[in-house]
Length: 469
Ligand code: PLP
Image 1 (cartoon, rainbow, N blue to C red):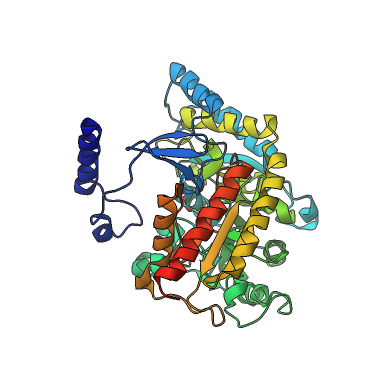
Image 2 (image 1 turned 120 degrees about the vertical axis):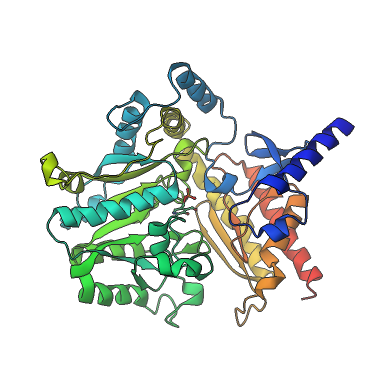
């Protein structure tokens, strides 16, 4: 026992001595021993002291079928017997080829949009990278160069939404819309057009849904009408703006954006990094509105949450614009060392096979309904401003005053208090400011859903007592 405590203490000290954690105020971090995860099984994580926790946010929104899924473990081991990595620059590999075929087969065909000029074609070409930010970076460069290659050199700008989050690299931040994350880097960013977010709870236009008739879309249209000749693409998180606070767009919004892109002849990039692979209840969020984009970005859940892999998937129309004699220099000069990594692709293939074999999406529907039903009573808690849910993506926005929707002062760290309290009761979650995020693996059971909501409800109720409200 002493050995275990000594070992853990050493890890805790060394963590604080050597590591710099992402999105973390390290001054706060250094004040307490970190929680160190040493194992995962199913929907649970084990810490260094042997305590088990429910993984309430799918290890940062990426785990799909649970931890240590035998089939995925085996696929990685089997691939390891052949080769861990070789390159896609000048060579190919079997898992990368097979996964690309599978992705092309399952990505949305957007049958409703067949009347449009730019959005009719299915996604047919897969360009790999290794994280969500790079898949977006690639989409931006691909859209930009598409127009360059077509001779429309003035189309250099992008249009994105307030509250958007597309990753942390400079291109992705340039189309981001979260002040607290992005404002410090403004001098480094390329300018981009920004329009209101479909955040009905705090409508930027002061309107109410549905009487607004989606006035935010009108603003997008005005901007496109004036500037479409300089805009390469609109980039959007389909249906749910994740890191912006789990903002669920009203039904028809995504379709409306797609139609505007067609009308004003700009490309549509959908960033499905958070929403793809069942998270919203369908394989891709685009399917909710029968939208087939020009470019789709996926990452996170693609390997079932096992290994870093991402894909930027596009149409034949875009792919063809890069075909030329070498000396015309229309080549897409972009690529990463671990692009199409065979281990990650092998894991991703099996991840998709499990979806098929176990009918994951079918079994998910009653669990989504149960989650909604269990969340409903939390609306009555005095500090709960709004509960937003699309499938297994949930945001519970906490407010100091329900009537006025007043935020808590940032220093109160309300979100942090809730997750710490939940952790004491065996649930790991991570907030976005004062929005409590729930995003369990798709493999979570009905009993576990009940437990997650119970623990979160309790943590919010307790917060009420502690803050004296
Ligand atoms: N795009 C969206 C919609 C995301 O939610 C995220 C991450 O949360 C990213 C891009 C960036 O992904 P990564 O953290 O893998 O770079």
